[in-house]
Length: 80
Image (cartoon, helix red, strand yellow):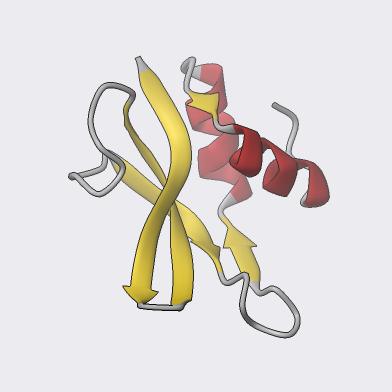
């Protein structure tokens, strides 16, 4: 089963995340099927970019978003 989740990047105490589609049973840092965008929680404006078309495509295919990604989708008006 596919999952849409966050992949941690960055350095110690300065994380940023990539929003990725990957297999549910693999670790988040392993290879992913596709990258959908990014999320910078440390930035003052909490910079986020999500490819809405591709996110909708993967949701139609049955990918399940994590709780955090689901919250990001709601902020960007992506129906999950």
